[in-house]
Length: 296
Image (cartoon, rainbow, N blue to C red; front, side):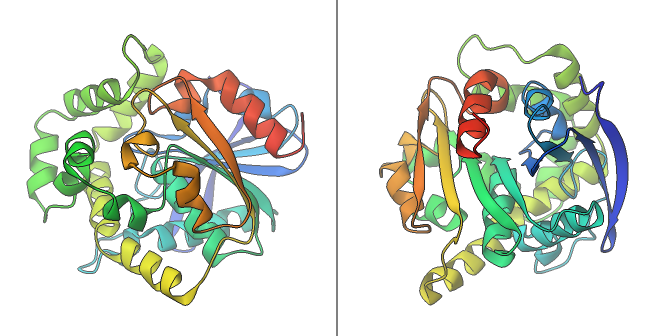
């Protein structure tokens, strides 16, 4: 799926990040979500590589990247820590400034990177994600049922790890299919790669820690930034899945209005698909990203 990409293992701080790179032009960092790997960009990254230098990593704790060591405060798995690690990986590749396109958890890492490393992030595209604090604040019965995995994965170890570990392939496949639009089928090689990586016990642990951070340190950092009036300095483009997306209409508020609480320049709109925009609507994502980044 990434035949023309180079596969690298990059030391970034205390971790080693697995990633693929291809193309020439302005650098773009593509960040995946849960419970996937960088492979979710298989239909998008090769096309973007005709205009950009595309970097596609596995997030820390996901895929074939190293897993942070868990801590009681969950800080090693915070989006701040992930953003710093991936910022270091981009520096190691020679990129001091770059655009970020993030889906799901990757978008949470992306906006944290734009807040903490404003000098590095030139533009930011968020796919089906509003900020973590706003997500929790807007959670009602409908959202709690639709995004049940947020409180489930945040339960103390080892409860979710043991339950998922009993049949990780079933859990990952069921979850992804339930979030996709009815009738959508993931590419078989991509699903096989997701299951291979998600079946690793250390990845199950790390991804649960990701959500524990998402229920503790991550919203605390968002709240501190909001109270201090910190905002994203770059332009933001937000696309959400209109069918089963979790960052869009299920939140109750106008999703663009939510992002305008955090940034001055926000554009975007809904897409006729489920949660997995890079795979369900790759042509739309490619078109929107190229236009937003000035390559159309």
